[in-house]
Length: 155
Image 1 (cartoon, helix red, strand yellow):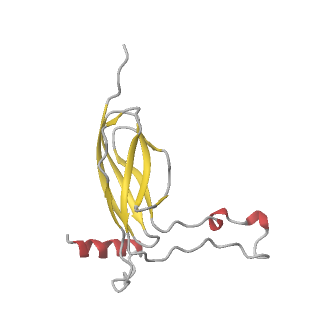
Image 2 (cartoon, helix red, strand yellow; image 1 turned 135 degrees about the vertical axis):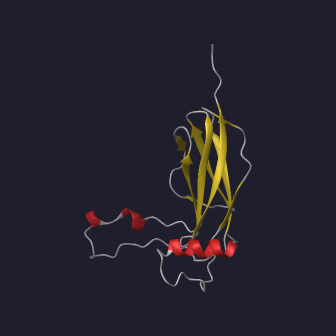
Image 3 (cartoon, helix red, strand yellow; image 1 turned 45 degrees about the horizontal axis):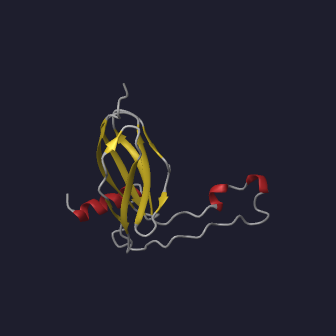
């Protein structure tokens, strides 16, 4: 499948099958690549760096402030008070023999073209992580295979 077909497929997914998937939309999905990963060992943190570029569309929106008198203070939604990151990356453990823990769960804002997270592997084996870059409207994902060696054994 060529790049243009993949982009249209991503637009169809993001618009939940809308008949007009936005081919005329000037926004393009971000591009993502992963910096080389040092060797991975059980018990040792592994730094994962996603290198992300985007066309700057859509422009990030500032956080919405609750309007006075619409909701009592006890019913305000904290999610609307936090800024939504524009360009961000999320990491997921897609496949592997054991649990993977990320120091920063959820979306990591891209700063200076990078989103960095630290992962911890609990068992040796071959893992596939997924990095998902989003610009707030479109997203793209990349699989990241990692072979984790066993930790040092003590006598």
